[in-house]
Amino acid sequence: MENNSTASRYTSSLAVMISLFFMWGFITSLNDVLTPFLKGVFELSHFEANLVQFAFFGAYFIGSMIYFISSVTIGDPIARMGYKNGIVLGLILSATGCFLFYPSAHYQSFGFFLGALSCISFGLTILQIAANPYVALLGKPETASSRLNLAQGFNSFGHTIAPVIGGFLIFKFFLTSDNPGANSVKVPYLIFGGAFLLLALFIAFVHLPAFTGHEKIEKKPEALKHRNLFWGIFAIFFYVGAEVSIGSNLVAYLKLPDIAGLAEADASRYLAFYWGGAMIGRFMGSISLSETKGVKKYLSMMAVAIVLFAIIFLITKIELGLVWYFLIFLVVNYFAFILGKSLPARTLTIFSVFVMALLLVGIFGSGKLAMWSMLGIGMFNSIMWSNIFTLAIDKLGKYTSQGSSLLVMMIVGGAILPLLQGALADATNVHYSLFVPLLAYLYLIFYGVKGYKINSAEN
Image (cartoon, rainbow, N blue to C red):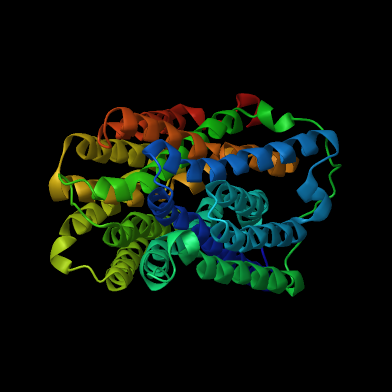
């Protein structure tokens, strides 16, 4: 059992990790604003505009592949350098990518922008490989999903406010007649790069518990022998791909005359409900999967949902009469958690079924119902990353970092599925392009029902 000093040390370390999750959530969500912005600046097709996500999430794949190859040739890099040093390195790389936006805008080069995004993503790759298992280790194994949901909740808070802040800065504040083209991203990304550097300096000097253990550093791809990890790799691929493809095409969807006919700046504000729903769901998930019991658990979940909805409502300044659909979906989400019975696999399955239903409304519906159905998907996506991740690395032991690198590698789904959806949108329309993420959630149902189960030999 953990003593008080250990628990206190874990709590302070978790708080530091939460700041990381917030930062990479913020910078990742800005891609949903950057995609339509660069589409207009460089007059791109839907397919070309989604190269923003391809460059960003494709770099995850390359970075993770390099990490995995290193782990099976020279030994696990995180095991050698430690979680703390890995996190600092990741922050410095992401800061460098943000600073590269300045010359990208100066030379008005779309290719340069894609390179800068890739550099940011390389840094986030290292952060993801180090931080996700680190958070899982900061306490009891049975509450690992709860801690990851809490950290992911703050990640979603970054996702939620980024479209509002980024949309204002890029589409309005820095976009003037004297500042044409892509120049309006210069100052915002300099600020974001500075924030990454400050966080790197802070973490470099703060104390974090070391989980190095005494096991020999292995040079074998043993993690892949674990059934729950093998199928979990594809679950991460489809989940991230679906979430990103929906988010990056939501502005185009909300601009459709039969949906809402919104301007880009206004549509960016509504994105806050997509990512804000994920934030609400992750905080509720943290409580649902924690050790809190009985009536206290469900009252706490309800209170968190109300408070966070109020925050989103105040941030977006959208009339209350326009958001009642979202409130209905929030109630449905609350009861879906109850149906999940605090079981990660069961909750993943139930939420995937609800997302498929909302996507079908988005494909075949129109008007406010279709619009809010798409925005409501975020709250059902909420627990998927943390639940899949903890189910996939369960019982991996000394191969946890290796398994983590494989899972992070599959974030490449965020590069591939948006391209497929963009190509389908160009060939048909934005409505029908939603069949791409719809198929992805079918696989998540499989993983939640059967794929997560551990080999009988490993029990």
